Image (cartoon, rainbow, N blue to C red; front, side, top):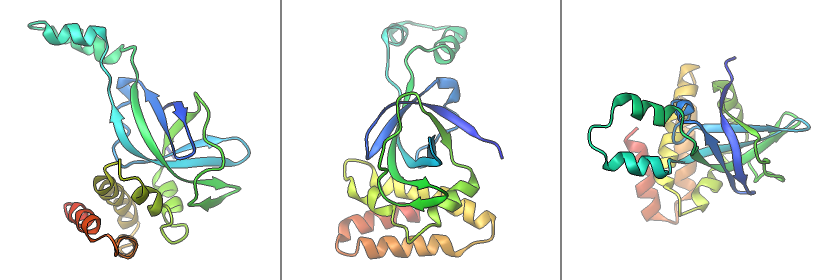
Length: 198
């Protein structure tokens, strides 16, 4: 199994955390990817990438106003950048002693902990546990792009399941979302519209 390290933790809380990575690591994580942070005592936290943020710095501000910036200067700034790319992750649950819980983790990860992209088997293990209980963490926060996040997550997870011949997971996930949002017709229509685009 190929383990893909995304970056290291900058800051965290119970509901989520922010990861820092170099620009040359940025081709791996994508919006909606499931990630994990292994911690001590057979315990790890799972989350979903909901934002990738690239801040500017003094040199970038200078380069923007310059004319005809050579390609090697642009490449150097992107590859040797001192300001990290920040990846925001929504906590969805945790694993303790080989059991998955779709609850907020009892302890957040610590600074400089390593964050990994989940493998297809880890995606199946986390998303297949329980009855989609982790959806409530996504639906709870209206400050995040919920519709797009759900669509990106379902698209990635659907690919994993269909690769292994499971056509039912996606239908069950959409049915669960319809049930959870039946009293919020506006959000339900938006979510189904975003899912329809995948």
